Length: 99
Image (cartoon, rainbow, N blue to C red):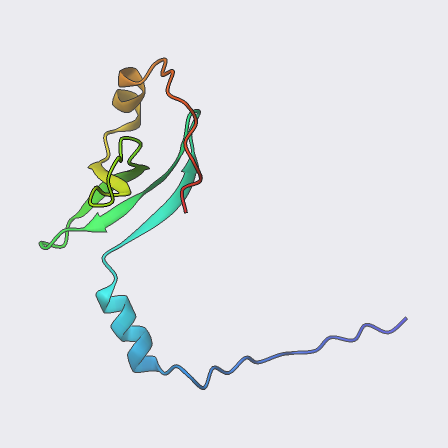
């Protein structure tokens, strides 16, 4: 049996190097989807104006009652050990899908 391998080069004619660099320069953070015991949430980091990074966590606004209230709330993230001490047993109902 003969092993046939094909090399493929993907060329994107719609983008060019300057745009890629522009997006890199405009980026201010990154988020990851997470699933907790009671709800899904986002965790990540944001760059401050001084260039330092702030760890953040984003939850659905479960108390939203009006359209002019936010869908999500953004919080500064605490170190993991402290955060778990403050949320030992929560009886909150499961939340809808986050994104």
